[in-house]
Amino acid sequence: FMKVKIITGCDNIEPVVEIKCSEVTKEVENVIDTINKLIISITGKKDGEKYILRLDDIYYFEAVENRVYAYLESDVYEVEHKISELNELLNHTTFIQTSRIIILNLSKINKIKAMVNGRILAELVNGEKMIISRLYASNFKNKLKGGNK
Image 1 (spheres, rainbow, N blue to C red):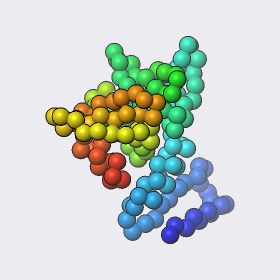
Image 2 (image 1 turned 135 degrees about the vertical axis):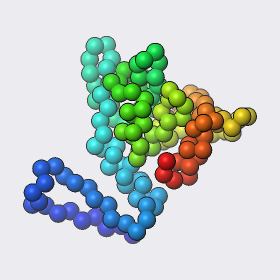
Image 3 (image 1 turned 180 degrees about the horizontal axis):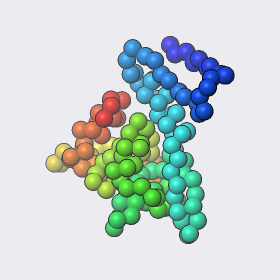
């Protein structure tokens, strides 16, 4: 059971969301993820123009030759963040780093399959296949189960 309490007339310049709980459950994590997806904005560049990208639309981020790209269903945008910055920024969302150069949106995964050498094959909803490297596999499994990083 969860209550929502809104307090207006405060001296805060910006809204503050505060969650009080005895433990961080899957439901609380879902609320945090939803809030973060609303307040975190990623700017992407394509054809010389800048766009604000919704996190829900991004399948994954990939670093290629000192640049980072956001891959959507049918578009690719260059973003101004490094993979390490995105990993920190998206920590409490459905995104997780799955290799040195990839941050993957868990909500875009259709199915997963264990591979040899501790790696994991993830098939995305668009049919694209991604490899979760052995180094990142345990964090990936933990986050899939609803755990923290």
